[in-house]
Amino acid sequence: MTIAPVQRSTSLGSSAWTDARLILALEEVVEKELDRHLKVAKEWMPHEFVPWSRGRDFPGVLDGEAWEPGDSKVTPLGRVSLVVNLLTEDNLPSYHHEIATMFGREGAWGTWVHRWTAEEGRHGIAIRDYLLTTRAVDPDELERARMSHMSEGFTSDNAHSMLQSVAYVAFQELATRISHRNTGHYAGCPLADQLLAKIANDENLHMVFYRNLLKAALEIAPDQAMRAIADVVTDFRMPGHGIPGFERAAAQIALGGVYNLRIHHDDVLQPVLRHLKVMEIGGLGPEGLQAQQELGVFLDGLDAQATKFDERQAARLARIAARKQ
Ligand SMILES: [Fe+2]
Ligand SMILES: [Fe+2]
Image (cartoon, rainbow, N blue to C red; front, side, top):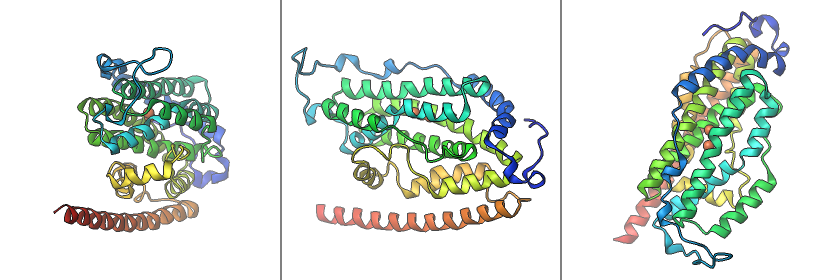
């Protein structure tokens, strides 16, 4: 990949890299990454993962059968996690608004924004169709949660900075991938596992796109990109944080091993940081160095916190096992 011979931030002064200039400077990379993405992304059919023959009418106009918790064999953890994942996907109109506003709707950036939105759109469709057809969740409760969540909308924590936006989505797409994949493993339904693996694969390709973009940003504006990465990593929040009852659901999801501090550190932050060699990048100016150091301190602290979480969790599981004997 050749990046237009733009001046490096050290000689230019980091303040000269406005969002508009960065968007322009990265257009060529977006074009190349979009091309690569379209070559590797394989078409798939969400409806093929939905067991339509198992569907039954609900009460109301069709006077069908009311939902009961025993209608589905999906595990309680799988149910909670599937709902969080679905409601997160449901807020796509807000995510689209945020990235379309930041990246624009023209040229290669615009093509990516629309293609990404189309791919994300099938995630919510497929999970909802699956959940309602298999009666895995209370449909009225799900609809009310969707209304409440979408009515709040989603506002990016990073709307003030193009680099922070790119850094956030690089980590967030991987977080979503891991969350879908682990939800599938614990759902207790092979079909849900297959569907979520398919969705996780889409999220992985999204992560690769944004990660490669972040790599290019580190090359053209290293100090600013390093600051953006440090800020995003230290303040990271999942996009679904506004879901009603999110804290409680997140605690269950953490204890169940779908997504917790250890997973966040080992399977989300570290793979991206290692791939980009963020902690080894040299030649930074004082601002970049400062950000890199802050990041190192934060990661050490997070690792220690994750170890404490693991120990508490192991002790808790041991107590549960002892009670069962
Ligand atoms: Fe998605
Ligand atoms: Fe995605």
